[in-house]
Image (cartoon, rainbow, N blue to C red; front, side, top):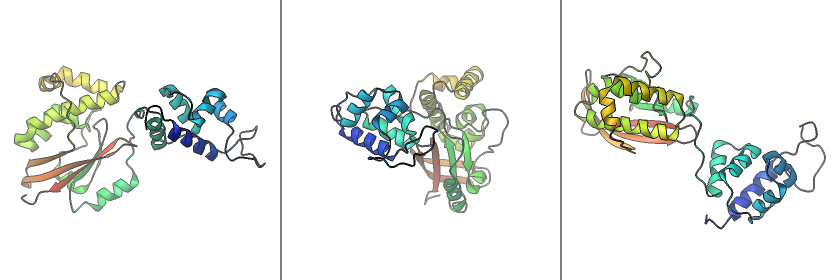
Length: 264
């Protein structure tokens, strides 16, 4: 949408307002019929804290580009879901707001998918803070234990620098893994800059791991969503996988698929 074209935003606002249920004085749905469906513009303006004159101009596509504060007020007034809020912001010419924190619950359908792939390939799920949330049976057999102690025991970046499980498993490719781990932690902190969990983990790794300090001071940001990894497993020997990462933006969850290579 061009910066001077607000027709799509105007249409979306009209559609959302028409879908709203008009309340009565006691907060219950009205029983009387209205000439038009949904809320009146004045009622919508009251819900959002925006003047009815400005809201009307938004619906007519005649208002200037709305600020993030206005878009936030509209999203709250319409009680939009995460995807709906993101759509509203894009129509308003702004990048969607980030989640305050990743969701801690994996979707049931995704968990069923993991179980369905138990005999086919290792699959893990981690969130945008790099905490491991779930893995299937094949992943549990292949990868290091994920039930250690301490507040950061399930965090992939923390495991990379505070333990030797993953670096031993990766062998010659451990150096690249450490680069990616530090870079992904930097990305997580840029997305959740006020997150106490991430800030505490950064402070601990900085204080206790010279190796982490070395990689962190490089200032790298790496967005790798696919890779080939060769693992040196104590039981299975040398095994190779093509790694693919799939993202669920609504919950900020990452699904990591380990597809066995034909030459493995």
